[in-house]
Image (tube, rainbow, N blue to C red):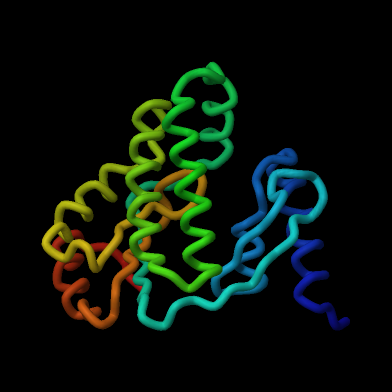
Length: 192
């Protein structure tokens, strides 16, 4: 049996949605299927989203840190849906604009690190306003540990449920893996 990645994605996303009672965008499934840098349109509909494959900028490195917290996407979604629509509207709108800026930076091969940094700040503001712990204490401690490396590094929670993994996005010309590893050693975390 030979399936192309689009067919694999459709099958895996259908199974994922069944397992999660039709919740979740499936972007994690798309990332596993296609790899690399992806964007999606209409990710929260029952039909498969349109996937855009983009080129990751060579000058930006990524170090993944395994978090000390298990993410629970369903719980986060449920909390979000139970929150009054007017709560955190300004923060949500700012967060959505920052997501657009990340997309534009990736698409236009512009300064994706600056766009990710803005997105991370907007996530923290939205997380506080919604009282949803998307930004974890570990992420905040890592941000403090790497503060001296700004603006060449961005620490960002990955995944809708917060936790699970934290990404260290860094500019390879200004920062080396050894610099990052030295700062993460104090936390005794798994890194990739």
